[in-house]
Image 1 (cartoon, rainbow, N blue to C red):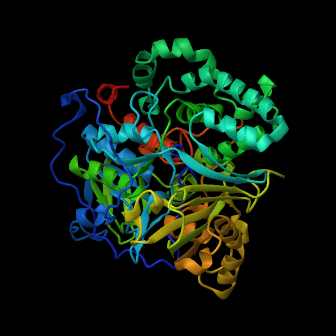
Image 2 (image 1 turned 90 degrees about the vertical axis):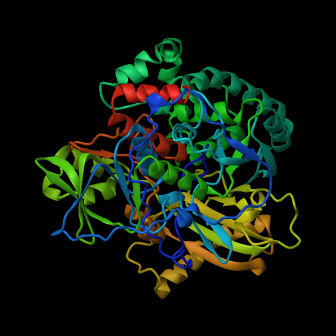
Image 3 (image 1 turned 30 degrees about the horizontal axis):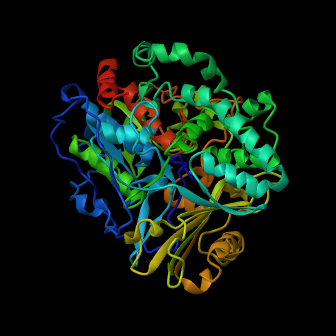
Length: 595
């Protein structure tokens, strides 16, 4: 999904020539020398840059170190304070914060590339993005900043950001280039709505007035302030009491769906605006406005429709964010091990005490095991006799989102316009719903902003169907079989047609073509049903916190609070880490990032 930074998705194509297997990434053995209490409360600057090329060799390669020999279950076990299962953005955020807090942390990842659904890979000089591609508020500071920006600030890992402010939208009413910020969209409404344009503009401006106090309320508490233990009384309520008292009434409105906000007002009736808002909600959460919590939309309005709003692309792509988090883990004494598949979470005396790896090694954790896997995959790692009925019921009754189709292309850019846009959103039809099967196609061409992501004179492109591809269509097929290949060809055509609206001769230009499916998601990301995550609708349920019904077992990622999307999963990792340390350390961290 797109993100604000918008939701993370992605996979490695089954036909990609993968980066050679990485060795385990090991951090230094020394404990952190700069815990939060010894640091001055100065905010970390973020480097900005213009459009210029850069090498795209992932830091994963240069950071790799030879792993120690592994031992079987009969040999000595490795001990640590906290084990994090999975190196997605949530897991790495959790581990980086724990390492900064002074905890001994070990990340275990099955894949040979860190990043989970945000990982990337290189083939023949083309850098392929598997997940997020539209980011914003990564350079902001204070309570309203992107949670990932808070984490990178806390671990002193700046990103180099390329700023821009436009994206291209193709809808049934036509094609238009829009900007973040409020004023330009009024011109779009006049263009799209014709005789009804002025009334549409009036409604849009009224919507801004409705959202202004809600946007303020949505940013009164930074997600990194949360923890799920009594210490929240200190880090949330005591620290931010003035904001809670002044924004509390509006804050209560944020707990329902965004559609309820619109319906209660009753004046936002223009069909294009309502459809467009459904689209924005879908891009944020994977659900239309009736299922998207109002807080998420209010935060987006605060980010995108403020004066001087900018989008940001991290130089080097999504892997630069992943590498920054890995460095944050390592330099503070933590470790990240690749190709370390967790077979089982160990339970002793009703408590999670460690893990058993596929190769037989036992690793024990003195404080906690944190799973960055989805709830459906986490429960499969547990000895079934130790799964509490309440936890099983929670997992069994949580609705599950659909999966994805992906199209990754490396192509010749000769003769293409130099102002080709990075982002294109194609909506084939508004009815019956924006989240209908094979309807919305998201297209990103990151090399137009960061030329180093492709060979000279070439571009790399990622198109995908966001959380609208049913797993049931693919269930029972074997990857690589003739039936599977035929279905890939059939189901990928909607993405090809969408790309052809941007680059009509794209098929003739291609040098590399890769298609990913829900089975690709399941295989490479080890996600049950290849799912995007829980499909919890606003007002019909809430995302659980990091704690589970098994002592010592916590979770982070898109199955936990605050939910789906890159900012949310980063926040979930911080929340899990906060919950495992003292309120004093947590408070000092909030001082350090100046929230």
